[in-house]
Length: 251
Image (cartoon, rainbow, N blue to C red; front, side, top):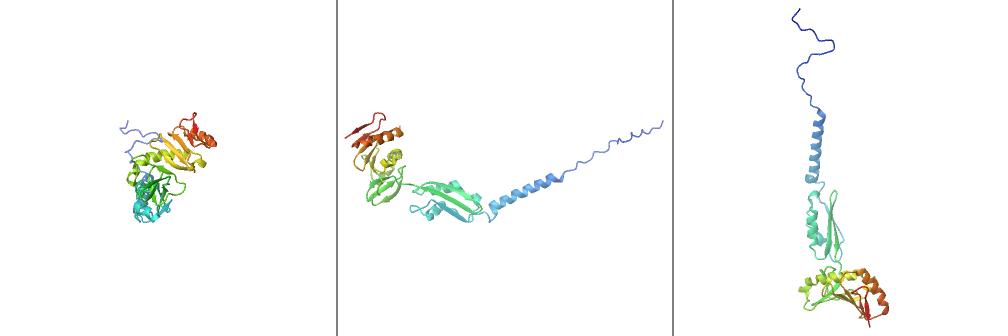
């Protein structure tokens, strides 16, 4: 017998040296493409001159607050990358304008910032030296007026309260009174001449004809409004609906 090993059966190969694994080119290509896309987007948003602030649109401005006032408060530099505009910070700055109640700021691609403002609406007039302060439903002094605007109720001051310096103390009164006015039927609300609210639980209204409505606190407002509408058919001088179900009239 020969010392040489027998050849392997036909079709069977002897194990040879380990073959090197071939790295696929597709994953590498896709990875490079993803990096390039991310870099391109970052450049477009942060470094390109294409997606920068070129205009600021203001909606809701009017005679109380001009577009120029809003832009001055917003302080958005032209040419700033649109992605870098801090919309929340811009809104806070515009909210600092006394006549502005709320602000919304948004980006409109590719190059516009939109500032939408909601102005405060006067609800009451308060007598102050030299005229009237016009307050909104939150007690904020929207503006001053030499004359009391027609159909704007007078907010009656509590004892020891008054003057322009004391307007901040009227905010609880204004909020309570405004809440009652919102609940009144429009035909009655238009006739209110004076609102008194020494405390939020002691709201009363005086109509243009001198009749008085004792409302009380803000609870059960829908019931009070319904009973008041029925009671006013009696043409009394006083309507007390502070306790719904036991409302009374006088005179």
